[in-house]
Length: 108
Length: 108
Image 1 (cartoon, rainbow over the protein chains, first blue to last red):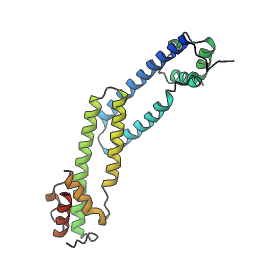
Image 2 (spheres, one colour; image 1 turned 135 degrees about the horizontal axis):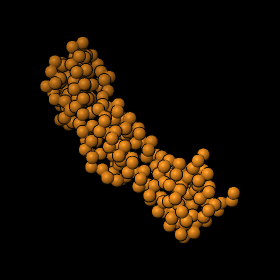
Image 3 (cartoon, rainbow over the protein chains, first blue to last red; image 1 turned 60 degrees about the vertical axis):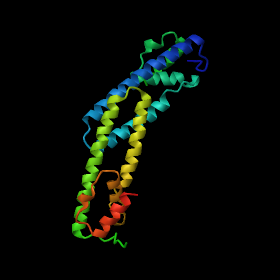
């Protein structure tokens, strides 16, 4: 399967930007909810440092994941679909080959 | 002023351990309250990462501050008094010279 991963047309770029924002907003909202829940339940220093470790890991992951370099985007979208932050339907309008690759990668 | 900072009698060690615990418990309780307040008020990712930065700094400071090496303890207690986590009265029973040094350092 050949996929031109570097070339994204204007309309594809627009779809990609929107999808990025949708997934990002969902993930951040869920993270803030998770932090609120954990903070509500914590009662000692060990749990506070566990919260800090958790935030460090999530920050590292999120900082690295939302890479909008065109050559990385099929992989990024497949990760977002796999993790449940994005539905394949929300990428409708991308080239069929890109969608097929994102779908295949998301199931690996 | 000569202070024998290395020698702590059994009764002084007991007072020191209790004072350490009092200050530590107060500081951690205040920190957890502060985290709860900040988490309650946060609404976006920048604020979440600011919370993470704050926790990183506080963890680093707390990990370094509660040093129970005898040679460090007058300095540690002076810091705790200066920061308001401990009252000089709670060190009653230590040698007069140690108390004088802790008091003097806490006002610097």
